View (cartoon, rainbow, N blue to C red):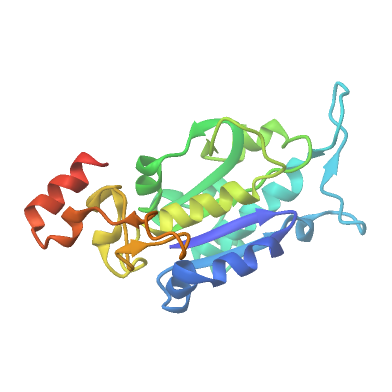
Length: 233
């Protein structure tokens, strides 16, 4: 699986994707995460990627041209084509064979959930388009993206955080990323967990106030423990 992220601020991903589970999965070669600066596909010296909205209104809108060029370039490289003549256009690349999916983050998109993450984990390449400013030219949604995704009923300053959420959630569905597949919440369930010490005193001078681990978890009775976990999901 290779994640391709198009953003105005590609460096914001560096530290998070190098750490913990995702960092380990990258070092093992299970996943690849590539971030691209949209300005690299700008047509002018100022590297302009946005402009005023037609019809008036506040803010600036990300233009279609750099996004189109970026997505086409990524698909071209992913296709393994040896020459430009081997492809006719972005849509000319056999996306189904390559298993490529292009996603635009949008407040109007389909709500992202675990089922969607599992579906997306079946692709070889995910191209994630991060919006900014007042929005993205609607033609990106109409002609370039395969689908629009929203991570919740709220508005963010850009698509970078949604991209991190999708990369994290989808990666967890890929075999080998978590180490043990049983670590998936979808399999083990989502229940309260505890660790040592068995008794924690928030105030060392007041031993009457103690925060304890449920006794059933210390019993060694796996049947009762499993029942307790199911009842507390």
